[in-house]
Image (tube, rainbow, N blue to C red):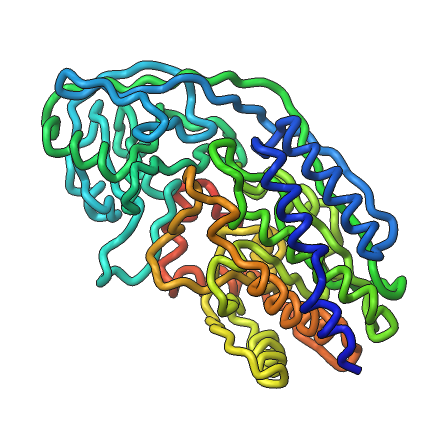
Length: 440
């Protein structure tokens, strides 16, 4: 039966929910807006046909943005199009000599004298470099080198300072003030002030806060379950349409399609839209810590779908999972970009790091890094409803396949995951950011 395909391709459920999420405004972790978005997602999942839709709260480190600035060469950079504090930066004002590290590769931090200095590093890596360097990796290399402050320069033009959290699970607030600066402001600061004294100031409020995960259920009441996930929260500076309103809208659309195909599910589908992803995968880590991971057959995590028309998938070294994804794409005659590599930066990871089969689905783009993500420009107008509908069809079929009794994807030994992280040169970065979970 293919009636569900036509119903999904003409459905407004996901797109309507996406509009609801972006119209909330600030969905920062721990905020009233995040809770409003979570409650709306709970209701949307119930309306889509899921059972037992509810919220589950958990505590987090709260952080609220104040004013921030960079003073360099007699000029103050404090406008919203120039500079923004990175979430979970500590408050404070420091001065130091500016050191422009360009892309901020690990070897750059090793060879430069950064003690007491203000480090400026770009958000991208050179084309020849073999892996992506996460913002927090560059930040903590600066911390380890004794820097006084960290400036994170966007590589995307358009007066768009990047945001994104610092801090670790053990110490949620970072150690030195951190500010994102636009490509244009960063270039001006580097040109005029490299080697000169600059001042970095961050005003932020810390408090105790709560976030929440949104849960719902589809299919039979089995011991094993397939997790269908996204995250509800977004950074406070934009609508969070791509990151990750689209992912949560996709979960709603897939849930509606699965409800129409519920008799085909051999395994329970546990729908979870996480809170507090943007401040360190807090919601997904909370769930992983209270879940018997042996009962999780697979995780299908939607984060960043629709930003490109073709779906991309991280298969995380699970050959059988890669085969399921490719089979679904072939049967539906849809392109899919599948990589066996590890991607440790979204809500599948607290499960997959311990060997749970997991895939991260996203929209494949041609640009480097996050593109419009984590900036003021992450807005609804850049997405298309057609893409959401098409991708929901592929993702629905994928979840049905993962929930099929004939689908067996063995868990991996965590030691194998750790070895693959080393092989892919990801271990060092995770160790410096406090994200390395393994006993060596």
